Length: 206
Image (cartoon, rainbow, N blue to C red; front, side, top):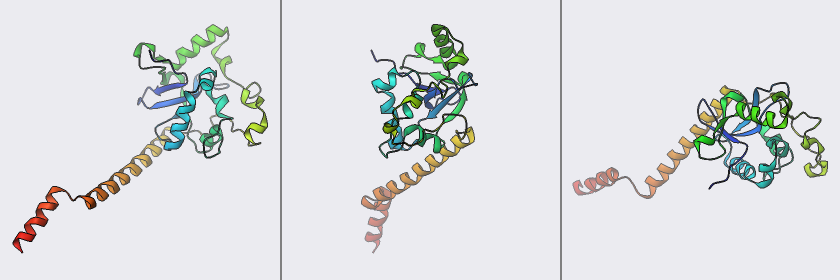
């Protein structure tokens, strides 16, 4: 039986996969901060997904706490890099479906999950948000992040739907150009059948 994976879901409107950075936001208990994974550069995508699957990340209450001290292979703190590159998206918790595994019956809307967690903790949903004063990221030894300031996980500079659409288009354009380039290379190595026939016919007529 496959184990359940925390911090992963999909957007209800388009089924695009997301990593949930914070399930609720300070003063905005009905909003969450997520990272759409599809538009990410391949290296960032693989390293982020790999980290989400790690035991450390799976034990964390909020993934955002750890992203503030974890680094990508290029040396950048994950939360900083994703924040500065506007890779994060603020969405309503009602628009996120948590998908811990492939079993549909285990999928749940994020707002419903937040209500369950709040009830178990004996607090309100609004009290689930991690504030700056109690975020473990702020308690981490500064030496571990080489004095690099940790980005604030707020709604400032996060992706809008238009930004996300722009990233998808840019990704599609890049893939299209790559397809064209690969097709040209393939044709140079082994011309299509129609081209071969035309070449043979030309030689016979000569």
